[in-house]
Image (cartoon, rainbow, N blue to C red; front, side, top):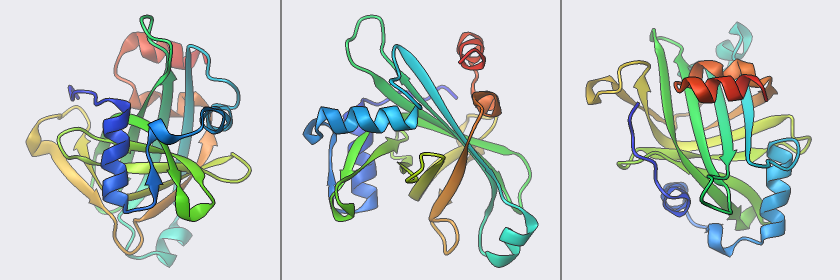
Length: 206
């Protein structure tokens, strides 16, 4: 998927606009709060590069109780990296989706930035966006840091290995597809979302 990366603030602004009012963008966030969120997300200070992987495979009982849910499995890989020529970290995400009534694997990716949600006691989240008006997601953490809480209105996904426009699809928030809770997993669980071989090797050694 050769999609251009956006800047952190652009990604945050897109998600804030799509999710509604009540968000403060990256430049208005206290650094200590952002650092604390990063330590929770990556189970420690991220350093030069860090990954966090979250996975959920919905069982038959869950899908029976949520008949309108389109997604049957989801994976999220969040990356923090300080480029060689910069002093601060860049954040990005990769999302993998399997549909309930449609075959194939679907992916999305883009950049992220910290957001503060004013109506939840100034909770810090990541706001992540896809370029070319591809929507995005918000990523929060559960209180015990063992799960990622993904919220979305709309995000463009592409059928894996088919990055052209004809392979694009939109995952939109329906009755049972607004909020997803994914469990923290070994980074290797998210290896299928990584295309670059060097990055794949780095992921597997984290």
